[in-house]
Structure formats: C-alpha cells, structure tokens
Length: 302
Length: 277
Image 1 (cartoon, each protein chain N blue to C red):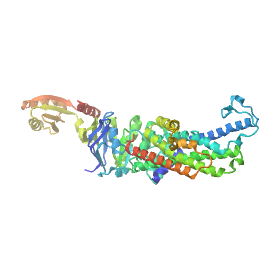
Image 2: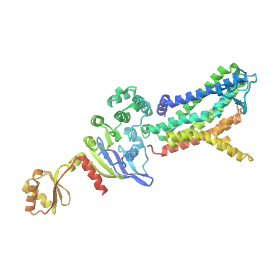
Image 3: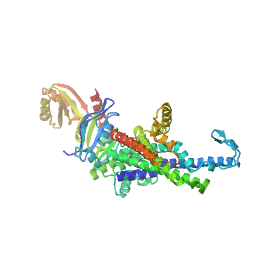
Image 4: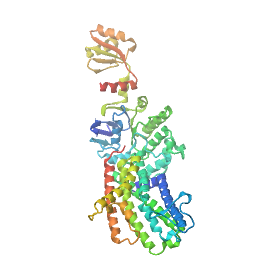
C-alpha cells in the first residue's frame, strides 16, 4: 500500500494536555480521507503538524514515503482553519504574493486557478468583500498554486450555503479524479463528507479511534437483522441450510448481522429457535452515516 | 530567498500602511516648517504673538519681535534633528512595522509560506530585509521633504558652509540607528503576533527606554557609566548636528550592529521555534 501521509505516534502537548495523542494515521495515495471529530478533538492541531506549521512534541510524520517531511512539503497544498489572505487585496494579488513566495515562474497559473475555482469574475473586488464561499475557494486556489500531489483541507465547507458546499464538493472530486490529487479533509458536515470520502479516520480527545474505508462504512451502516445468540456458528449453519441465507456476518462472538429476509424477522427467529439456537436478542439495526458517527464518538466516550 | 524577497517587496508595494505612515511623516515635516514660518513672521514683527490664540515661546519665554529672522538661528540640520530625535521616526516606523509584520500572522498569509519548502530562518530574514528597505525609503522621503521644504522656506543659504559634510555624517549615523531600531521593532512584532499589542509595545519601546535610561544615567551620575549611549533612540536624540567624528560614527555602527544581530537572531529563533497559528 502506498501512503501519501503516514504518522507514527504523533503527539502534541499544549500546557501539559495531550491535544493529539499518539496518532497513527494512514492516508492512501489517490484517496479522499475524511477526518472526523468533534470541536477540540485535535483535528486542526494534527493537520498543522502534518503541514509543518506546528512542531510535534513526539512522534513522526512521513510524507510520500520519506522520513524528511520538510523536503516533501513542497508537494502539498494546505487550507487550515481559514484562508490566509489579505482582505485589502484582490484574489489575484493574494495569489501573486504566494506565487512569488513559492517561486512559481508561470504567471498564467493564476488565471488557470481563478478559472478552476470560479473566481475569474471577481476582478478588482477586494477579498474583504468576498462571500465566505469565495474566500474558501480562494484558499483552495492558493493551496493549488504549486500543483500539489496532496491537499490538506481543514473544514473547507464550514459556513457555506448549500450551493457553496456543492461547488466545493464538486471541485474536490474533480481534483481527486481528474488530477489524481490525494486529499485529507476534515468537516463537521458528515453527510457531505460521506459523498466524497473514500476513507475515514475518527478522532476523539486527541486519539485516533478508528480508520476504515467507505465500503466498510457502508457495510457498518447497512440495515440488518441483528441477532445475539448463544452459538453463532450453529445459528450461521441454520441460516444457510434452512433459510438459504448467505448474506450475513459475525462481527463479534455471539452476534450475527443478517442482511436478508429483513421483512420476515419473526420467521427467521422462529426457525433459529426450532433448530436449537438460543435467541437472546433480535432487532432491526442500521442508520444513516451521521447517526453512525455520532454513535461511534459517543460510544467511545462511554 | 530571491522569491521571498520578491513577494515581500510586492506586499510592501501594496501596503497601505507604508504609504500612510510615509505621508504622515512628510506631513509632520511640513507642519514643523509651518510652525517656524509663523515664528519667523513674529520674529520679524509681521505677526503679533498670540494671533488666533497661538502663542509661540522660545526658551520658555513668550517670543517677541526682534527684528531678525528665525532662520538665522534654525537651519535644515535643526529640522532634521527634530525628526530623528523627537520620536517621530521611532513612532511612525514602529506603527508601520507592526502592521507590516504582524499583518502576516493576523491574516494567516504566513501559513501559505511556511512549510512549503522555504526554511523558516530565510522567511524571517526576507521579511526583515524588506522591512528595513521600507523603513529606509520612509526615512529617506522624510529627509528629502526636509531638504525640499528647507529650500522653499529658508532658501539657498540653508545649504551654505559645512552643510553638506554635516548633513551626510548626521544622516549616515541616524540611518545606522534606524536600521538597528527596525530590527528591534520586527522582533517585537514577531514576539507579540498581535496588532494591538505589537503597536503598543513598539511605541513603548520607542519612548520608554529613553526616559528610563536617562533616569538611570542621572542615578549613576557620579560614576562614568552612561547606559543611554547604548540605546539607539537615546543616541538619535543626542547625536551632534556638526563635527561628528569618525570615532563616534564607528561607535554608533558597533552599537547598531550588536542590536541588529541580537534582535535578528532572537527573532529568527522565535520564528523557528513558535508554531504558526
């Protein structure tokens, strides 16, 4: 597996508090990695360390497989917390400052980025008069200036109206699919995140709870008939032989999730019991992504 | 480094505070000349002191008509000393530098530059160099305004005698002080990273040490120790208008050099160590 970003026990301590606690993140090349966590969970601090804006207290960051992240950071673009722009200047002037700072010779690159982010019509309008969406798009344009291979975006759709959210979402998908840019993105709007992310990482109180793929998430959120039994292997045999059910899994000892015959759960229960399975719990489970994440974050806290 | 210098120069060119502070300094120059023009008219008996409620005093006494001209006592060098020793340069440059340096942090623009392949030390140095250039331009324009206004109000006689030598020596020494002081202001901006705190602290640095050091000098009066001679703003105020010796110039260069190096090193260290927020 080729990783664009890999961290090992990355830790940041502020005033004796571990804001980021031994995080080991793995961002696959070509993926859109959704970084989920409540306010103050440590997402921004983690991203700032990955971007080189904050020094880790301990642990390491590996970018593009290299243990020398300073060199590799030329290949990343960042938009962390809010777009770093001068309000008294135009979008073009802000881009010009960053273009010069990064030593990018092609002046036309600015035109292309303004076009790509839909800001070419902003003209001489000062950034302080921009809408939130325009500012965010300018932030993404700045992050894109050096044609990065990896984008780190912290809450890029925060405060945007539905149209703005859709525009940013479409832009990110375009950048990922057409330009092959790997994206690490954090957001509170989980429904939106789930529309673009291919991988997820969940952080709570500075600890990375879990990493999983979109397929795994879909499976976890899939509607199912959940059974708690005394003998899961016996129950599985009954499901296959007596009911011809093959779509199920055993996520943990004594628990089965059945994805078929959801309209006749009482019939399934009856046949299991008739065949010697002691049924302790039986209910329909499954929820939307937002509900799943909320449950995950809440569950871990307990 | 050249890329960063180019970007900083671009920012300086677009900086409103740069032009406003420069215009303010030039305005103060002309305002000072205006005051002396009024004093001159009173001195020559063309205007009565107290006209319009404005009373002009000289050496603590109400100025009366003496039949001569004030320009016989006050020349361009005295006007220059008003600019450099009257906190004008220190305060205005402190405001400009605070806005120019701290604006980078408050806007978040610094996040677009740090961690993108440029060493932090080089980023800080390029900022410092362009800030120095900006301050030198501001001061040069003010000095040019002083010369121009001197030509307008005093006439050619203002440039007579040893003026050229004295002017070059005096401004040269003052530039050394200003360069070192700029590095100190950049350091305060870097340390605070907050506009209100930076401006307040900058003006405090421009004004307070002079008073404190003067007090200490008085306290240490019986000994030969004079602490104020090691502080640029104090040196600016006490710089002789004529007869500057090479020894004095070298001493100023050494003191300015030490302050410049110390402030730059401390600023670089802080910029290197502190997280970017």
